[in-house]
Amino acid sequence: MSEDDKLPFTAHLEELRTRLIHCFIAVAVGFVLCYSFRKQVFDILVAPLKKVMKTGDTLIYTHLPEAFFTFLKTAFLSGLMLASPVILYQFWMFVAPGLYDREKRLLLPIVSLSTIFFAGGALFGYFIVFPLGFEFFLSFATDSIRPMPSMKEYLGFSSKLLIAFGIVFELPLVLTFLARLGVVSAEFLKKYRKYAILIFFAGSAILTPPDVITQIMMAFPLMLLYEISILGAKIFGRKKQSLEDEEQDSDLSHEAE
Image (tube, rainbow, N blue to C red; front, top):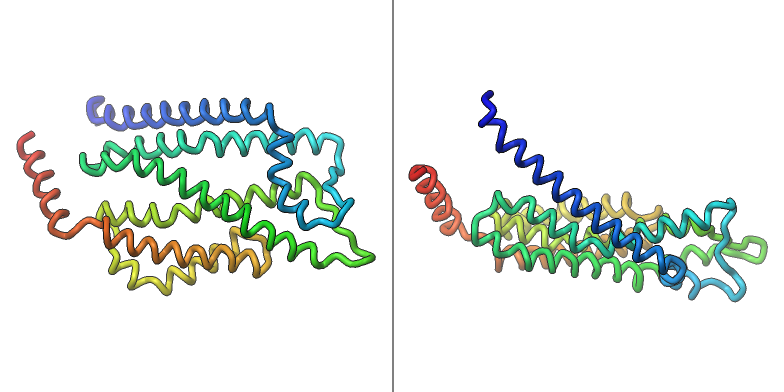
């Protein structure tokens, strides 16, 4: 293979490297900013648990460096959330060269909507799932059994749920975008709806803690989001004639070259 044949691939890797560096810089800046407010951020994160805990109960840490590393991880995760618009933008710009011109014009709205959907999923988990889930878990306490959650365990548990809900709420956007590319259609999504529901419940069991409450509270929104995806695919999906016209234009451009 000649050096000219290798150039496009190496250029592709160079672009990937550049975009990853931009993502790392954005996360680093977000981390530094959030570390300055690490205690306040952690207090906000733990607020849903404090509301359902008994008076006088509090979180603990069982190892000397645990609090320090917990605040460090809190700052990192918060910085990651803060940098998510930049990360999403870099991702979509990386795939942009493989899109048609009319699809490239959708990148800015897609980046904005990706951020909104991710934040919406995280907020849904924080305001809806957390209070109900924590109340369920603390209901097993008795006069002889007292819950004493640690900082490390709570951060791992809550961050996992927040990220999981943020990701799954991207479903309508992803499926609508795939429909716009012609990969799927509204009819395809309707046909395989029952399989999608099965996948939702299986995925919820993997992504959430081993209790029925949080699994159902993730699976049901996913079912609703799937129906929204079908509507989005029906409205914004690429029509068959449009797809054929673009393929003909692409063939003509290649012939002209």
